Image (cartoon, rainbow, N blue to C red; front, side, top):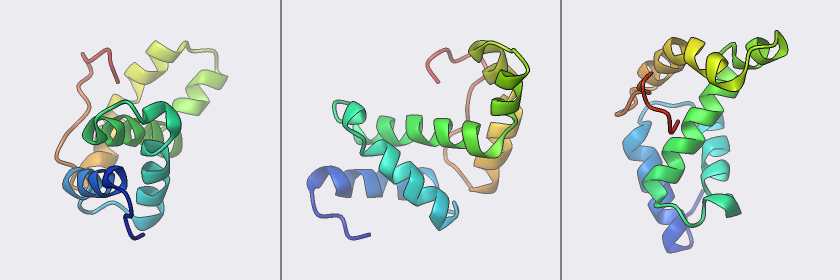
Length: 104
């Protein structure tokens, strides 16, 4: 994707810095989420991080299954931190999810 606006270029740079080895299909979904209107007021690096965590949680962990089993969001998020970090490690991410961080 060719970045046309300053925001698009900043998101592209943040993606490259955060996820140097992530698969293209995942990168494109994360890019779209980071560019969503509700993320517009956030700094690009934060928008990319939040989009990444949400994408990995929903697409690469048992998070959805835990919710379906009746776990609340916070409990389900707690139980998938390891899986989330495993995916981030495989993608050579420069940041990991902290289990004690309430923001993610």
